[in-house]
Length: 394
Image (cartoon, rainbow, N blue to C red; front, side, top):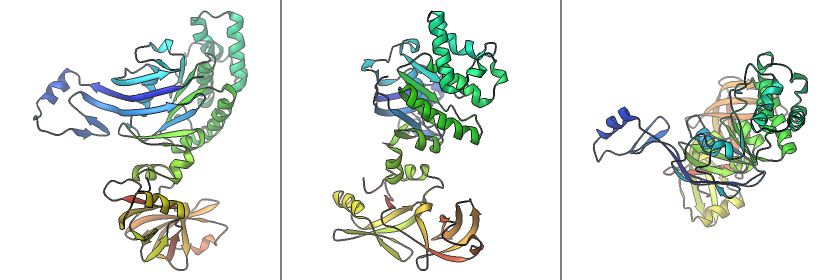
């Protein structure tokens, strides 16, 4: 159990000799550029930039973002598998920048299990304890306790090749548990599993967290994992933190367009709209529909002295409501999803998704090409600056 602090942490991968020569040929006044997701500077390729995060004791933090955003690199810097280019890392108040991985009292679970194929499950789980020269009875007690927690006691005598993917991942987690680490690091541990197993293992990790009660740092590109597992989630893009907050905070109050589009499934509908200020009141306008924003939104906009302007208006599919009058739309596709129907419609020159609970309307009422109207509630409408892409409330 431990606190973890990352202070202005940065990771730069220096150019190899050939790349450096090529880089040096650029003109002195040529600006820095980006290639794929990463920033290219004179120092090299910047994978993580200005990363600041305080993780409380026993907190479950999830780093989430698209591939190449720097989340795994950040985790590997905490583990000591990557050198920190700049900034400071503290575990339990102790500076760890130059401490060897084996001395950081952390345990890491990898995406590909990394089990020894020639060893049994028991031997895989006991291996790190044997290296520490623990007594046999201590090793046996810890291995069997971990196996019981993960429900793999019956597999202790098997080798990894005789296990399913989910069972192998349990063994990998068990190997980490027996070390009783201060910090538990998990790098996309469920990404190799099928959808059903992922759901099952997510539930197992939630139970595990309650039983072993340690600090977790979990990396994933799957927002469902982030939203269901994390006490707080850290959303990353191009090496920078975009927002830190509870799952509910980032869902209800996205800091910018990227977070709004990344969190939530299906993705948030975005429109070219208008924010109108009338005294202390604010209205969102779209397609002839004018809706007053909620009091809490108005208070935040007043605090920031926001004025009337063209905006990007964000409305989640589940908050987009069919109505007799409202923004006109034409149905392109109707998808039956069991408890709801996902209507893909064209409106305001955009592809829009509207989620309609099946209890509200007859599903066979929706036909391709049908004209419908929709509206929205001012409590769940989000207004983003067209210039900065930031949420105008914050």
